[in-house]
Length: 184
Image (cartoon, rainbow, N blue to C red; front, side, top):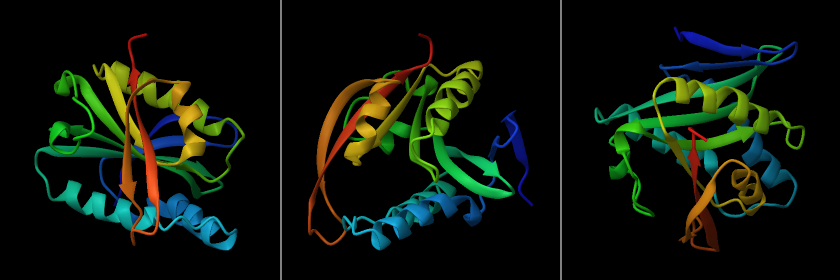
């Protein structure tokens, strides 16, 4: 049984996290992949496959830990993101991680209802304060979704760019890497 810890509640949304993992938490990522397929935005990158692979590797690596954060609305998971800690330098080769002991990675951030400020509220008023309170100084995040670049610039500083092939090498995906300072 998953032990969910509620970090914040509004009249419609519950922001919580769990140290244990349940595949149901990934529903917002599945919704996004379905949306891309249904709306002609397929970019040959299956986020659900990649996050499932990441979770499996995290569960089998004693040097890393992760928290699964969710947003619940009407008993349905409508937002998910993973925060990874531990020996995160072994996971990341696009930039140098300064002060690994006080650093985290943000992975697979998805909110079903986009453009309503829910994601910004979540990062600013839930995620950053929670991990700052836990003694962390920075969160690193990478994204290969161009529409998210300006979103992450609102919270952090661009520190690197990268290119990667899509799943079947049909496209080149350009990505950006950001460092979010928690003590500012």
